[in-house]
Amino acid sequence: GQPAQVYCMARDGIPAAHGALVMLLNAICYQTVTLGLAVCAMVWKPALLRDLGGGLGFLLGMGAAVAVFLTAGMLAFLFTPRPAGALANWVLKQGARLHLVRDLPAARRRLDKQMEEYGRGAACLQARPTLLPRLLGLTALQLISLYLVPSVVYGAFGLSGRSIPELVAMQAILTLAVSFLPLPGAVGAAEGAFLRGYTLFFGTELVAPAMLASRGISFYSFLLIATAVAL
Image 1 (cartoon, one colour):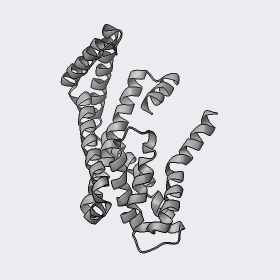
Image 2 (tube, rainbow, N blue to C red):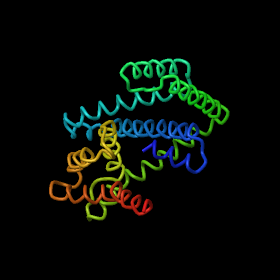
Image 3 (cartoon, one colour):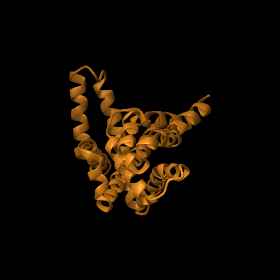
Image 4 (cartoon, rainbow, N blue to C red):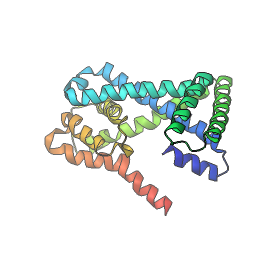
């Protein structure tokens, strides 16, 4: 995840403070686009949300709440550093009381340095007003490409009758529903949500093979590629 990316960038000569800012911007764009695509899908096809039932509806509500909370918090760190810094200092102080933070002064110095970097990042965004929209556009292109995978599988199975935008909309809703779960890649939850949601498209006999093919392409193949690169 993000700590590993910051570490690799630091190893390549990018200061850790800059790397953390990059990860913050990336996370803001990811959360914003994930929420935005899901909301558009629900507004465009409210029947999909009704068909999912109460269980996934609850997860969807939790996912939306967490996405809004995290995005607001990250934007606060970026554009309102004083209140965010005060909150972070309070968290560090509580961590020191619980003996989770061993060296409080050193932790505060690192926090102050990072908050300064966030301030420079906010200034950079304000000086380049097109940068954030471009980042959001690239993130949307990335996520829509992943959301298209079930559509490709749908066509490969020789099925017809449902449109590509409908399949993409379902994937956008399911992604938001499982995004807040503290699981690497939402493993298990994503598969269960796929079986629940895409039964409407693939039917009971083909939904499990479709899940294996779709998740194999959009998630597990990345693990294989990453393993090959790491070795």
